[in-house]
Amino acid sequence: MKREIIHVSTGRPYDIIVENGLLRETGALAAKVTKARNAAVITDTNVAPLFLEAVKNSLEEAGFSVKTYIFPAGETSKNHKTLIGIYEFLAQNGFNRSDVIIALGGGVVGDVAGFAAATFMRGMDFIQVPTTLLAQIDSSIGGKTAVDLCEGKNLVGAFWQPRLVICDPDTLKTLDKRIFADGMAEAIKHTLIKDRTLFERLCDGMQVDAEFICRNIDIKRRVVERDERESGERMLLNFGHTLGHAIEKVYNYEKYTHGEAVAIGMVTITQFAERRGLTKPGTASKIARVIEKNGLPVSCDAPLSEILKAAKNDKKRSAGGITLVLLHDIGEGYLYRVSDSEFNRFFSEVE
Ligand SMILES: NC(=O)c1ccc[n+]([C@@H]2O[C@H](COP(=O)([O-])OP(=O)(O)OC[C@H]3O[C@@H](n4cnc5c(N)ncnc54)[C@H](O)[C@@H]3O)[C@@H](O)[C@H]2O)c1
Ligand SMILES: [Zn+2]
Image (tube, rainbow, N blue to C red; front, side):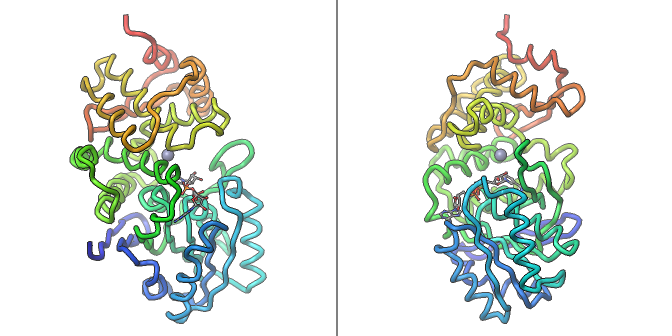
């Protein structure tokens, strides 16, 4: 597939460019969107040996002076300690607000480097080079940046749109199977809420290639453009997440990845919605088939009552009631608001 450019019309618009091999053009592409001459490339210990040299060389060829910061891979690095490490690195190397931060890696790198870009000297240019499926189709789009606290994930963050997203599907070749599947859960979610045709192509064995990634990016783009600050439509992206987050918590974030828990959440909520006549019959089993085909689980053995308890605790702060995301049918997500007591009834057996 030739180069695809997806334009995102948020408050500060930017392009997402998708093409195999694009990583090697990082420098030339960056030079078009920023006046900066100094680039700080931030990445993690898994991604650095794979792609850092190519990105650094490309930036230097385009005239950037490059410094790199590498932190230990994994969600446990998405915290204030890493953030302070990045601030100190920037300060010690004389970076200022007219320079650019380049986030090379998965969602963790994108979120923490993005938050550093949003806050260091009140905001620097920021370019995302996502290298996981999840980062390419989900976390690099929409401008949310954050770090975790011990008290919870993503509790400190900012909306900060990148100047550019450089998406090279070739980088996905080195991904661990389970991490790839994790991203697939969000990709399947996108098709379920918005794109029936893409879902059907997945059922027919469509591979994850540049076209699939573009279609997926476009679904998230449309949703965030309509709702940049997450008040309404953007909540559709939470399909499977109310139960998914609860499942992650019940298993202490150990047994299931985020995507696996969301996969279980999407199937489970759709099963109950079907029983209540809120979703077209047969939808849950269609979802389950695609989920299983992609190496993701469709159920777990924790008692439902425990999952619901965790889900309700999670939602305590949203003042009375919970917004569920349901499907009328494949490709047609909608919001369904319930009170606390209706929430329990929703998941009780239908008489
Ligand atoms: N900002 C948003 O809107 C948004 C949306 C969804 C998720 N997120 C965040 O994204 C994070 C999860 O992202 P993730 O799944 O990409 O996790 P991640 O960044 O931890 O990447 C997963 C693992 O893959 C490795 N890796 C990355 N690219 C690789 C490659 N090409 N080849 C081999 N290994 C590679 C990483 O080093 C890491 O070990 C979470 O912190 C989540 O909160 C943010
Ligand atoms: Zn998710």
